[in-house]
Length: 331
Image (cartoon, rainbow, N blue to C red; front, side, top):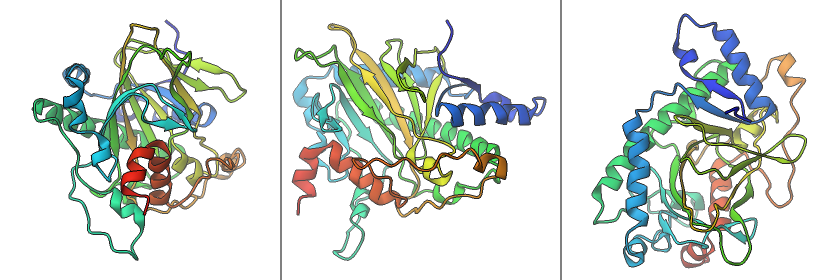
């Protein structure tokens, strides 16, 4: 099988016998030209990548009333279970059900003069009858964080910066989150939208997908290409914060998920590397030869890119989950 997206072997970044400049050139090319690439050599143990999919299937097989016991409408932080058809992309419903999980933190008492995005900090919801979901998900999330941070450090070097350039924003207060997702066979209304076309608003996204395809990536010249599942790999894509930081040298690429055929389920687990909510992204100084190829930050009236990460994140949640927004954020 020939992959349509670039393939990056992350073990080359750690191997002192490998030509690091050649590795960084390959990574820079993939991130600049496509914004999407596979990552292998990541070191995440197969028992964890297999375990997260196994426990996902166990959760989504629970009776619907048990899933709804942790419905995200109970959470001002948008955590927990979202039933099929209750998340929206570009105003159209997505045909998937999912659990949203963030860092385990206590909710804050947010005063009227404090930024509203501080209310996004808070606890997760977990099903009482499936305790290993919490254990496996948090272990998987920790590994996804390690992988995404390693990719980000490599990208820093590839962009002519110090390896730890972005580290300030990724301490214990970083706003990372994961989704555990089931895509049922396509809806009876004729729509094939599993998830509508969109960009991710963090720094990076790392996706584990099962063997059922459906993820599609928009090519620079137009048209869509399948991100065909590659066993043992993650799919990594550039988020909007890196587009802002590099003045468009790296670009956040639109992508979507097409629903599987009727009677087929697809499972995936994306992880989103977001910085601290108080981060304000400032453009870095690129080497002259890279700066000459920067395309500028995308301008989209329906999706303005905000350098203040907390504001950007809150807008995304409010657009995507109107029931949660109406209950907790309408005042």
